[in-house]
Length: 437
Ligand SMILES: NC(=O)c1ccc[n+]([C@@H]2O[C@H](COP(=O)([O-])OP(=O)(O)OC[C@H]3O[C@@H](n4cnc5c(N)ncnc54)[C@H](O)[C@@H]3O)[C@@H](O)[C@H]2O)c1
Image 1 (cartoon, rainbow, N blue to C red):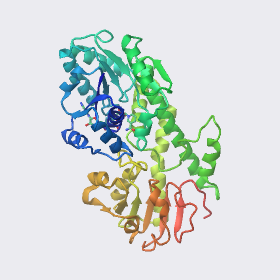
Image 2 (cartoon, rainbow, N blue to C red):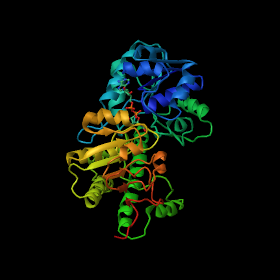
Image 3 (cartoon, rainbow, N blue to C red):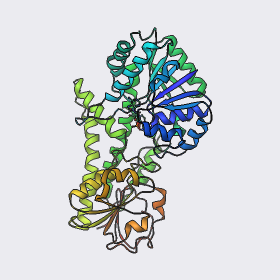
Image 4 (spheres, protein in one colour):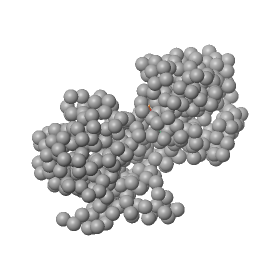
């Protein structure tokens, strides 16, 4: 059995590395030549815990990394994990997946195999039937279900635990027709994950499951953020205690109830917008989803108005941002709330210094020389007039009176309540904690 994975980003490279480390014969393909070169040398193009280690184990076994699509011609399974970003109107941008399946189709035309193409990328309901299938049949001159298999297989991994999630998923969803191909894929996954439920459904339901999942998680975040704003106006109230207790109710669950600056990252914002756009297109006014998005955007406004309230006019003030990654243990800054905040503060002519343990390089790609990049927390706080804690990196818990002693004005706005229990010689404001004025 030979397996191809197309698109070596967070999803594809995690899958490639895990499959190869288990001894499968794997070909990982990406159009980015530089990225392929790095991966071939055992270097991950992005930071993800345990990824490099797993990749290197795989490279010692049967793993090939290339930008040459012809290598997929003798593969039995072809996973597709290319990006599906959003267009400026919020709709899903399918150009990468179109291009990838066009190429697969052309290779398929010359192949003697009957491979199974498995779509991992998040795609809006109907994409498999209306976009992917017609392209593949046209380019290959072959028939889906007879000459090749086509399965939807949405991915649920989270960045920062991508390897663990790939090794131990909570569920496997397979969308498609009950064909010999479906049987093969089911048997493949049941061997790979013996104790995990495998749900077989049709394509459009599988596609929608992914959006249901992410929009529910976004809803939980906006819900707790709205409550945290209310708490801020109740002296002594603490959103973390509230989240902890409601999370004990099994009907609610404890995850995704961390109040903060709003959801960011490469998935929730774009998937929410794509679902809203899709709902509009099928004649449904998605009032709840719109409210979730609006609450998320308002959270940023709340932070800025808190800064203005505590610091006065923002222009030419020296402001430190601690954490630019959209969450800890990743260097991913895509749709990060910290990046959004920096852009807004720069517009108001603030002087920005940032520190992040992993994401400085990616932040530099966005802001170049417009902001200052510090080498440590203390460095970042030197002469600062206000610091805003955006990402809950473990390192930030070490911050103490010594680290802030060279701040020009000791104002701390803690969007993650990292320092809530510390006695600091500073004006300290935390999102979700009511303060007596
Ligand atoms: N990142 C996550 O946490 C996550 C979780 C679940 C699902 N997803 C979904 O999985 C998909 C991939 O996400 P990601 O974060 O891994 O993306 P990514 O942007 O990190 O990686 C995508 C990769 O695909 C490559 N690529 C683009 N076009 C290509 C083509 N035609 N042929 C070969 N390679 C091509 C790019 O060079 C890039 O390396 C998306 O649909 C995303 O919504 C992502």
